[in-house]
Length: 76
Image 1 (tube, rainbow, N blue to C red):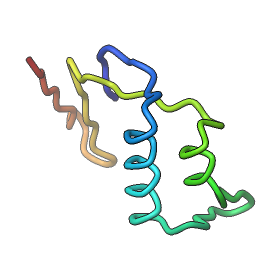
Image 2: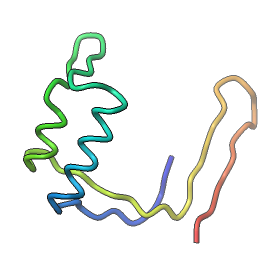
Image 3: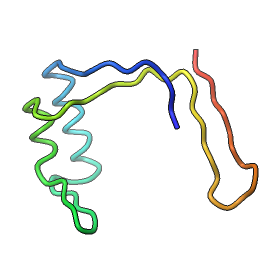
C-alpha cells in the first residue's frame, strides 16, 4: 500500500515514456485470464486513459504467510 500526493500526468513526453516502459516490461498485448490490456500503451500515448504519478509519503508491505510480517517505509 502506498500513501502520498497524486497528480495527473499530462505531458506528451511523460506519457510516451510511461507507455514505452509498460510495453518493455509486459509487451504490447499483455493479457490476463479472461481480460486483455492490448493497446494500453497506445491509449496512454494518446491520452485516452488517465495516468497518475504518486509522490510517496508512506508505504506498507505485508508478507503472505508470516504473522506480523508488515513493514512500513517513510519517505521525505
